Image 1 (cartoon, rainbow, N blue to C red):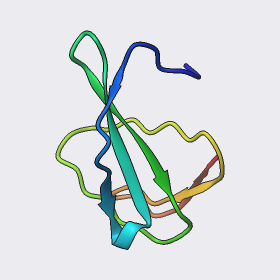
Image 2: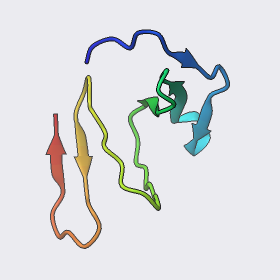
Image 3: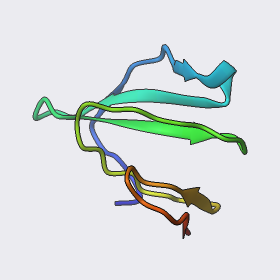
Image 4: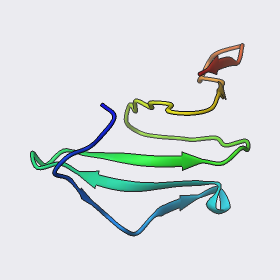
Length: 75
């Protein structure tokens, strides 16, 4: 999906890591929501209670998943 249609966007940004990572909440007509985020180059450790799916639109990401021994590059 390259475009979200008929959605509302919460203007207030969620800001993490001193502004290195920001996101906006997008709400869909069916009540579901997603976040649209931007990550500046840097080292970040995320913790979540729920499973998350991240779609990388531009750039590369080196990821070390819990209990993994090796880093994986995601394009």
